[in-house]
Image 1 (cartoon, rainbow, N blue to C red):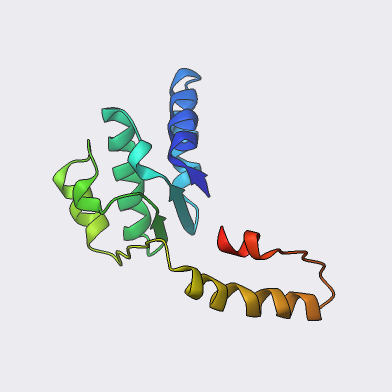
Image 2: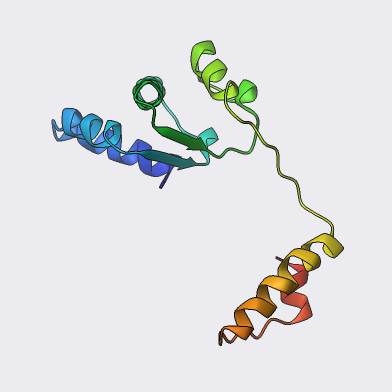
Length: 130
């Protein structure tokens, strides 16, 4: 797992320290790449490196999971090929659920954890903001 900011930082650091090959080999050898906040990935070279890494992982039958605050077609700075590749996978939108649904999901989880001995002093206010 890494955020888009971490990807940029690690990539730029690798370029500055002449270790870009190591950076690429390390990322392209993993089984699962999980990047959060892809909308914050900045820079043409960084976009290109992300695209090449994603392509190499997919061609190697590995998993790529991306989280962003917008659908792939609306990600700025990415070329059409990358947006198409991202949109070709499972794209799921998440929105803020109603309080009743959040309670239905969280209360059984909290109860199950309490049965196992976990101490979770959750107030109704905490459940409302989950």
